[in-house]
Length: 190
Image: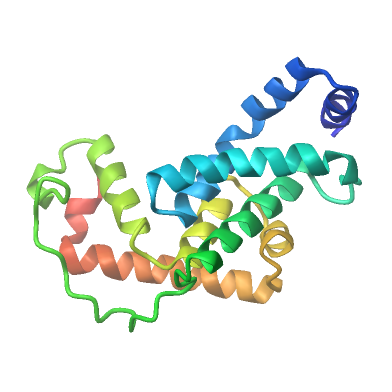
């Protein structure tokens, strides 16, 4: 907290090196959220830049009432929501969960017997995460990759803790269903 406060003071005083350090420190958080919410590669890059511009422009309004990472994640989340709303992209897929037909195997979707190492398993898991609704994958990312609490995720998304828990449960269940529809459990345990 103290380091963040000092870094913010330096940035607000015009220290460009401090801002570069800030970007480096929080780049992973920003990209995790943006990449889970936005599928178009060029739009991802533009959105990440837009997020850091918004952070820079609003840094003086940060009041330390929450963790800096939570404040940043909220800006990222809202920026992504605005992007999706402008393009009229669905926040939650209107598909009936579990009724999606399994995709055929291809170079981008390896057969279970080709899953020989952890990297391929990680690729498979990430590919399936990309196919679940954006709010679900965002909450999965915030909880599992960023280690945020239900309360922090609620602050970012504007959802009550109970809804966050429910979405996280539903996201895990949907991901499990998608994986088991394509692969045998023993193929997924490496």
